[in-house]
Length: 222
Image (tube, rainbow, N blue to C red; front, side, top):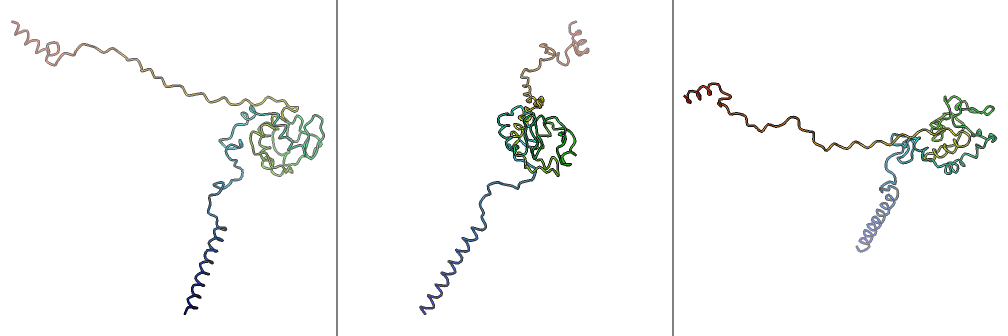
């Protein structure tokens, strides 16, 4: 009898240990903690504060007005593996970029630009460079350029300002003026129109109002 009791107790203990082990393992696999970042990423949408696209993004003209050429030169080092920017510099994997701002796409004769880039209309304006530096593949689908882009809007503006200073020197676009403060409400009460009469209106039945009352008053006087 005692052996049977010990056997049952042993099985119960083993079952409890197994259940505890499963609980620990499932807790490790199915972690219910709060994620570090809520929501799901959407391709092509930058987070607030990056200065990229979207309605809340800082306008390019404002970013260029705040651009730092020294920081732009430092950031341009990401490009020197493929590009030179000195006057008369040789082409590398990419074309020489001296004086490129404002020039047409594929303007350097003899360089093998991709058809994807040559098919993009227009020139290398400040806005075009901002889009290109954001994502070359989106700007010119099919381009051979493998550079992923610069997600930070102010860093892009720094690079563009630095490139503009290397032989282009075009005037920067004017930043939009700050919104004017709303006019203060006029606290002065409007002037009163007309004067209030201090004279009391004659009562109903007075001689000046009721002709019959005037006749009765005249008879009493006689």
